Length: 135
Image 1: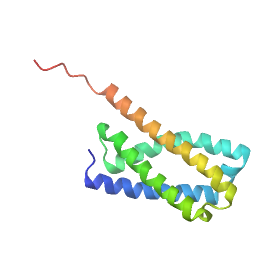
Image 2 (image 1 turned 90 degrees about the horizontal axis):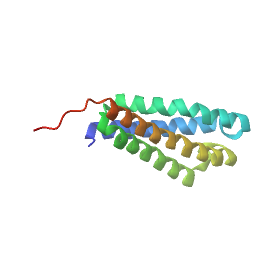
Image 3 (image 1 turned 90 degrees about the vertical axis):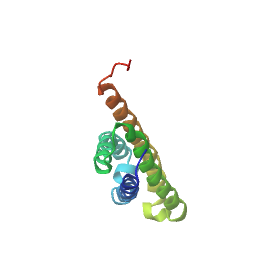
Image 4 (image 1 turned 30 degrees about the vertical axis):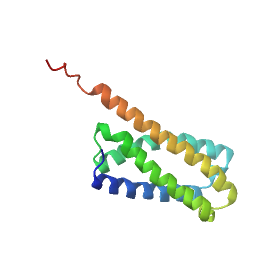
C-alpha cells in the first residue's frame, strides 16, 4: 500500500495537474474548442498521459505494485478538484463552451492516464523474473 509520504506527494501532484488542466483549458482554448485544435489536443494527450504516469511514479517513488493505486489516487484528487470547480467556480475554465468541451478532454486525459498506469504495471509484471515455486 501507499505510505504517508507517497500520499502527500500524489495529493500535491493531483492538485498541480488540476491547475495545469485549468490553465490548458483557460489559456489555450484553441486546443479545446476549435475542431482541428481540439483533435490536436486529444492527440497530444496520449504521450502526455504516459509522461505523467512516469513522472509521478518517480516523484512518489512508486514500485511496480503501487503504480495503479498511486496513479488512481492522483486522478481521484484531480477529478474531485475539477468537480468542485466546475460546480461552484465554472468561470475559472473560461467561456461556457470551453468548460463543456474541456470537461470532455478531462475525461479523455484521465482515462489515458489510468490506462497508461495499467499498461505500466502490466509491463513491469511481465518483465519481472519468474521465481520457481518454493519446495
